[in-house]
Image (cartoon, rainbow, N blue to C red):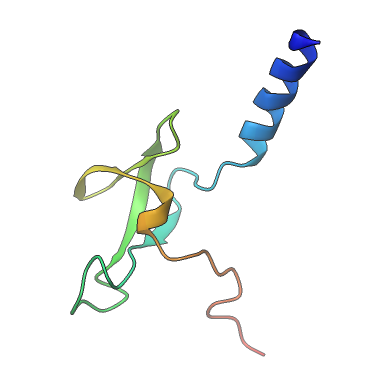
Amino acid sequence: MAIFNSKNKKETSAANVWARPEMLVTFKAEIMPGRSREERTFRIKSVRSNGRVVLHDFTGEHREGAFESLNFLRGTVK
């Protein structure tokens, strides 16, 4: 049974990836107070195996919880 469980974990972990390279992410306002949404938005350079991301023009590795939830409907016209 262990063989089946490890295979299923690999498949589900790949399905739960929250970020992709070159995707835009926005830091939560609490982390960068006083900055506009545009100033808090960065492009992902790479995604680490632990789920953290490295950003273009911003140092360090950052976890999913540091960013606003993704809203794919933001900016769409009704």
